[in-house]
Length: 160
Image (cartoon, rainbow, N blue to C red; front, side, top):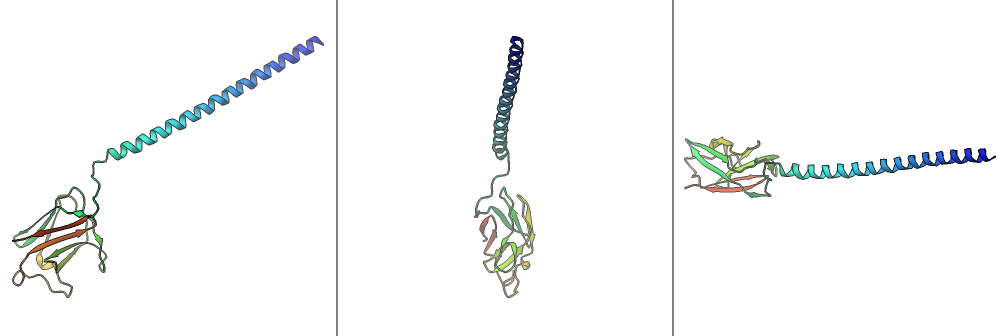
């Protein structure tokens, strides 16, 4: 009977040791998972912070004054984007999306394409029309001012 008790005790000890080892392994695995989750969170946090800092394109200002060079070159109106961001067409009342270019606040031209930094638009002043269809004419009108309106802002330029 002593042998039976001793065998039973040895078996119980072995089972307890095996159970303790399993519990230790479970605890280590749980701790490992927690560490991995923390490391992953830290990596994602750093990645999001550094990816925002590495962007070289400056943010678009909200409706700022546009920087442009507007000039006449042999009868052609040349408009150059001097901003560091692209001008994009804005919503107009009846005509859809366009960059609105105006001469003397009455003659209008709707430019429907993006204008990238340092790009130029070349237009004949006769391309500009009034609402009733009358075209700008150098013989009957003098060029006083020029305005640009797009999603990013507004610009006004004078002529002498």
